[in-house]
Every structure is written in C-alpha cells, then in structure tokens.
Image (tube, rainbow, N blue to C red; front, side):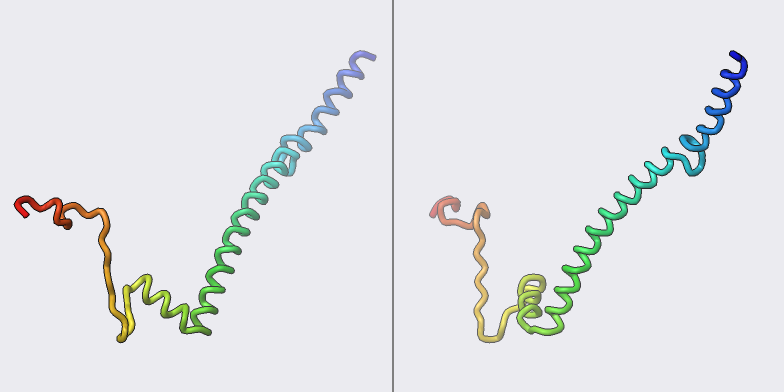
Length: 102
C-alpha cells in the first residue's frame, strides 16, 4: 500500500512538471504577460507621441501662424517691418561699472 502511494505521488509530480515548468507552463505565461504589459505601455507612449506629431503636421499644413512661429523660434527669422532687439543679461564686462578708469 505504501509503495502504491509513493508511485501515485511520483506520477502526480511528473504530471505537474509541464504545468509549472514546461514550455507552456505558468511561469512562462507570467513572464509573457509581463512582457506584453511592458509592450502595451511602450505602445501607448509612442501612440501619444505620434498623435502630437500628427497634430503638429496638420497645424503646419493648414495655418501660416505655426510656420511663422517655428521660423521665429528655431531659425531666428523676423519680418521686414520689425526691429530685432537682443537683450543680454548677466554677461560680465558689458556694463559701465565693470570697466576700469571710466
């Protein structure tokens, strides 16, 4: 009777092995679920970035204000009838108090 119980326990353990540690076991399933969740988060971030870029492209295609703003900020362009003033703050040696003898 004792030998039968040990044999049945051994067979039960052999049957359980593929369920827990095999190719399609629970440990593998948990790891795959973790990877899927990480990929979903990455896809959500990329989807938001694509949406922002799509909105920017649409704005650039439809309105001149976005093109003008981009030209001003990124290229430093000004209109013909505008005067450009550049104010430098905190640059040493540009003020009258720092020049000796005056």
